Image (cartoon, rainbow, N blue to C red; front, top):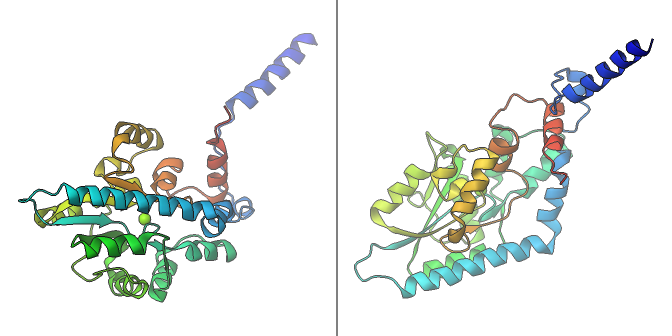
Length: 273
Ligand SMILES: [Mg+2]
């Protein structure tokens, strides 16, 4: 009797200890119990409502201006014309309304809804961005907008940037995605004619291809290695809503997870100590 009790207890313990941290249930009736974007509500509220978000973007652009002034003061006589490379989404334009709509209508990202939002061309400027880029333009520094918006979005993207007052947004300076997600080829094209003095972005791949398609640990290690560049040549803008930190990091570059599985993955990656 006692040995049976020990065996049963052992099986129960084994069952608990063998539970994977990811719920692999793909049953649709279960998946539907998790609202698709509910987990982004806190990030959205922070970006849209907190004064801390605005303080951080101003901090980023104040640092950018200091670094630019320094680069201008130290410009070599024979150097190529100076250029700044910037990302667009969540660096100069705020797309939080698109993300808020996904919560409201309980839908995930699709390229068709994203393109429709882009066509509205109503994204607001990220606080601090307009002053900085117009200041750079007034100093004769070229601005290149390198974004992974698709090339079919070029017209409305330029229209949105122009409407908000960003300088010299045109088909020569707004370089959208054609064949590859990686931005290195487009950065290299700019470097053929200009010296890139700084890069701005909310995603680490906006700065170097070292960060392309890397998992969380590698991304964190690279930031540690390159820490002296941040706040100087690399100016980072906050984006808690989405990014490679989520798709390549949290979800490990896999797009196969159900809503329920994603919920389980997110919770399994919370650090408790
Ligand atoms: Mg971005």
